[in-house]
Image (cartoon, rainbow, N blue to C red; front, side, top):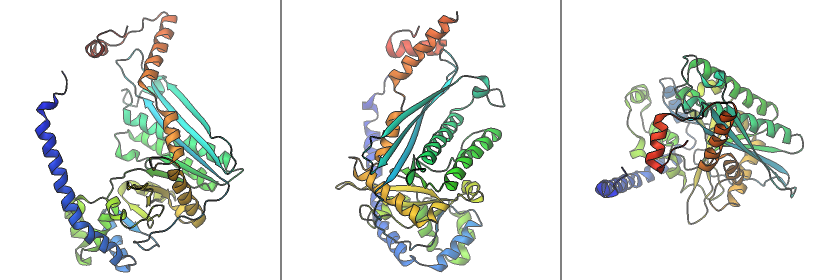
Length: 396
């Protein structure tokens, strides 16, 4: 059975019309939101409202020490600076496969700007098959969320190891793809596993802080509305904050995302003000001195507009030299690519990805290994059925 497109054509047309209607509503309210950003750019009353709102569980952007409507050009990039980036991919455990295992593959790149040296690119695959690696405390096979979190910790560990080594000879910027925080508490991960992952992750952040290496997470096309939520808070009377926070369940300003606010404010290469994240999961990082902050960065290449979100720990924000070097490095990296995305992150992803052909060849290696040990390699009946239905042949 295939997806019969003729049966959903009307639904697709309705979806397009719905998207157009939502865009029209957002476009109508955007000038108001941008006006609020300027009006409250240096507003002490707003900061008092934020403190009151946080006490009752509000989530949004916390203003720091910069004007909210800041549009800052990047400083000059040092002649000698090293960029280090990692990314990862995985093969999840599958009880219907020839054997029970999972794979984590980490791609990494070291780019020593100002030396003329070629990038140092590596990939590091790890096959996990021991019972301690595969089973949780409840004796069930670990979930995909656990594997993904372990991959994130492995990515960060390799990023930190390489960065600390490179920092012995030149300033370093360490870059990761996506959110800087592990966010394990938002996943269905058992408490014991979660606590270990969080400890290991925080340990890595401690190491880069100790070695004075700025680290950041780069998020392309973010869909967050933290600054929009801050602007909504600005419109609420101070004596109604607690009630409004508790009762406000709808989307902010017709679903406006922050990138829509900043695409008219920031010129290419400019960054926004820095904000701190107000969210329940962020307390862990606050308590350890790594409170997650973010800013928006215009990495556009006309005629397309591209606003990225960059997440950094508080100790990077507090060091103007680190923050400036990070800003300049990201602008330079996005400038030299065709798609306004950091070159080193593109390469790290290429090195990490596991293709379908590579996975098939790996499964073949497993089958050969099992045969050499006198074990018949056999997938489950369910897997065999799917293989026959999709490709007309058995995996055996």
